[in-house]
Length: 398
Image 1 (cartoon, rainbow, N blue to C red):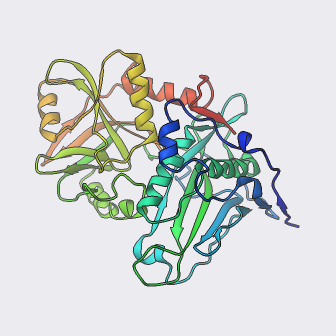
Image 2 (image 1 turned 60 degrees about the vertical axis):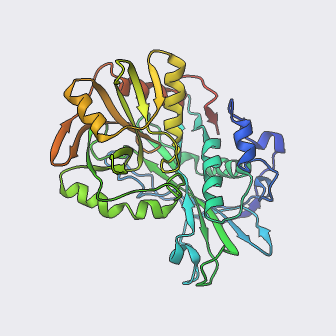
């Protein structure tokens, strides 16, 4: 029979994930600290499932289609504030037909992963950066704040319950999807007076069906993903739902992803659901790794930030956050100055780009994924940290 018990409490000091270097000030100004009204992980109520689902075969597993036995649910109301966190059997949610998330997209989400190392320990990769970004998105959606460290501790408890779902593989992981929605039963366009925060887990392999092979991109200014003053720098569902139409048009043109452009000069912004990097010899003859700046239309990716920090620490070439245009890319290819181009993100880690279709022309991008190229090196260094092969304070043991 399922049980409903309070999870073992831990002190506030031990319940908090360690702060990352240089992050203390950023986290405080984003209400990640306990200075805001919040639920408490120590109050978590656990109701175990009466039965366990079979674990899937990882080979050929489609991304985000299989889910674990349990989920985390936390309710909020303007009158009562935050309720107790509940870890309960995975199941459908019951919401009112007038729910504001359904009608006005008052919702957001995050994405991070749990990795099982050869030492059998389960690790999270820089999870407080996800909490910081989630709180930024919540403010933009007019949803109430919470203590990010408390949510992270709730997620840790959920992972403890479903730890057997973390794959025993260095090419797979357990995807973690925190989701936050307005649930007020009103058709008024306003700040919701009720909300629901929940977390679901899904074992995953490679995000792309082609695995680590180079992806092809369709670059066209016909559609715009985000604009200044909008929500492009927040992880809101509306940003992704509105991109699906363009994604299918890219497929019609024989490409796997959309390379989003912005402005009359066709600035390069993002790749599908990834940040973009160009490794090249720039106009000044310098070897450079460049990525578009965080100007309000770019999602501040955790993998993006980690790549910038890693390569700057190497000190082997110039690392820049700068604007890039399709004219820059086209000229650099003509002059043989492009070394590699790739996307980055939690789902794919690092994904090389092999071709860009732009204005009817196929731009072939050099790839060195099977030798000592930058993409291969970054993929190795990042996954070594994530799976615990390289000790790092970026990897937090669950």
